[in-house]
Image (cartoon, rainbow, N blue to C red; front, side):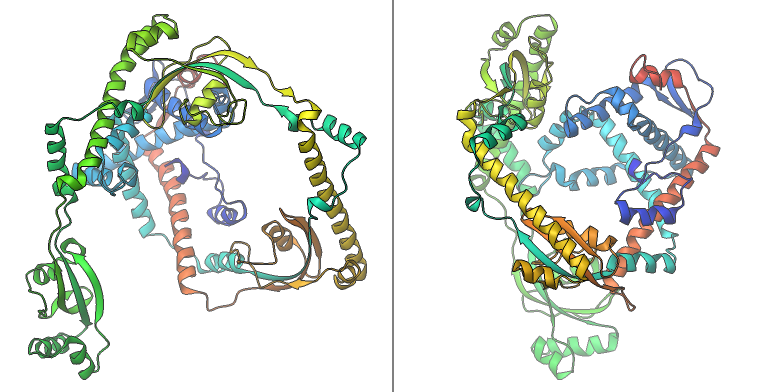
Length: 631
């Protein structure tokens, strides 16, 4: 919900325009809510509700986990404070409590049936067959360190927030002037003349002298140095490897099959054609004509109606109830009487009936065995982690802890930050997990990490045994690379210099033509292009779009790309005129409406603070974050 919060001080029109200029909104704050401390272990009081120190700390820990996964393991609490993320986390908690209290007052609820449906429909928890997989759900909760009750509570909160947002959206009005202004900004188009100078091929560049090689080598030491390598001892509980040794019992396979059989059975389907009528009398006349023996298409042609619409092969649940009730009792080839829905009167014909398709044990056995073995491996690992955690907490070295749980250690003689060994090959024995390498390169020598989880449900502990610092490779080893990079640098410099001279000549003459002729280059005229829509095979590289939209008519700009340099002259500015594209205009209107509803939500939240006063204890908040950091 925090992404939907906006500062009340800024106007919503300015923020919507800023969306297109900087593609983001500022996150609102609650700095004005600090009042006298409440004391004890309560971070905030919201009416008769409270945010405990423990609840706040859990959210902060979750925030740190997410940030470390995104930007690295060095991210700490002090950085979170400086970036305003701690304050934003508190904002979110406060607003959740406010909405929950208001929802209770209004009698809004998210019942268990709806929650179950939302969880089952969440693609995050679907297996390759696009079905809900309980193991994936449990794995997700485990990875997030989130009890199931907390997840359901959070989901209830999101559903309540969504209800309130939708209520606000229903009354939101987008001013036509605002819609027109942003539509024109998005769809303004420009045309430019372009000269393109490609980087020359490396092969045509003269080889550098020995002095040039030495100078380039000395100035670019970082490019020719071996990376830092770390020597590790790793205990890795890998569910994929453990599952290979597990053979599920025949009974568990049969039980899983019985559970899956109903879920994976494809229900009866029917291939349908229809004609939709707005008048019941016409529909009845047509239906009688077809049921008397006239072919559906022939009857439609005779009555001057459009061709029957092919609906495809559908399940009962794919159809509105009035239609499904009738067509799923009709035999093949039969035509229905007119059926009333909100769209009009339907006359349908059943062209084919596909009976239910139930899976067999043979068809599912391989997948069931894999699933059960993986599930058993994860359960086994969870039991082992308890014993492993106790051993490490008791001060036992990694070697002894491994013996206690019957697992062997992995010795890594050297690994870099990309997971490669000293020969540049990827190490296959270590966990395929970014967090593993982050841990390996943020842990001091001699220290053992805590028990960490991998993305595939495994666990590992590592110890850093030694660090080999980055070292400059000898010139005779990297000489070929030095020469190649020197040549690439020369191609860039020479092309840049040539592009600048062409721009200077074009500005002095007022045209690209003399400069193009002098250098034997061609001038191409672009198709009309906008700020946001990329045209395939355009002569305008992405790097040139922004400079051209900042340029004045007839102005000349220059920009590098991955393939060379472009010099362009802005020739035409085209503003969009009405009538606008209906679909694009409607999509824009919907987006603006959603953003305005978010602004109303911010104001709504401010109003709730008057109804449910918010009091924050700064001292408890500080202790919850760092224990001593004052901010």
